[in-house]
Image (cartoon, rainbow, N blue to C red; front, side, top):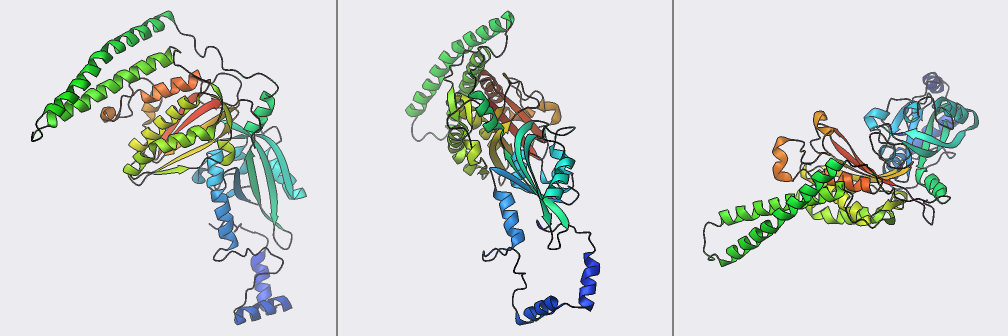
Length: 440
């Protein structure tokens, strides 16, 4: 579908037929121009002077490549006709979900603070443009504060043929301006813990420490043994198997210790005001070689405004969470697949346990991997849970549990969506805090 072609039911076919029978002076001139090989572009229309690109393609490229704004196109009834990557990244609705749906798809039930979709379409049609701000809805039901401009599109005869809409995510700006007027701090306790749970965590910690000492000795002894073996040994496979499994066991113990500390609130955090961009860039650099080794494409779709979002947390721990999410995505995405990381804000969040009133900054990791079965999705953050029985060799099953606990210790949360055979989306939510300067 062409970006700029919007069905026009204004009798154009009858007019075209009439024009063929009774060509005007302008039509005769255009026909003569065609015969001469000249352009028939009307002089009063915008004709982009970019070699090899027409107006339709330019509009498509803009809608696909914008990151700080979402741009999409509707017909004159407000039905979405063209929905690009810029709109998907901000609003999370896919092209298949959005195209053919009415503009009210992205509005809260009953309309937003600034009115309904129908009101805004009517005002744009009457005055040429509507500009305002209010809550809009993402595909998972979460909301964000949007600044929107809805513009009526008219043909040369002045007849309404459609609308174009530009949206800017203003949640961060709104939150920071409010936060500048109040103190923002991490809650002293995120979750109340029972005495029995504390006792169990202490036991796990003690056992893990006890296991770690002999394991380290085993790993060291295997290394010494390997060096002492004759260079001509033709059967080192048993040593290699011992090394591999002892390292795996040591990783499990380390993960159990980390999980115990996280659940007990004993993880060392150094929270401060940070910008999302730093942790994202560090995490992507850490997994770049892994992605290349599996022939998986990493795409950074974080806009400049999203990367500049201020959050309250420990930047090292945020990077740790993102590395875990990216590493999992790489493990479970086949060669030739794609992993996209994006960011933004939300005012209300569906399916998350968040401390404080919000709003929130988020980082989202999407993959085109195998997906997670619906019956497993609810327990994927539980310790030692795997999406499939055969996944034990790929990890301990503790990474997501640790990551969620770390997120919650920082006043945020970690959520997941997935569709079997399509892919998964993991979203890290963090509290937005006051900053100077105010985000763009």
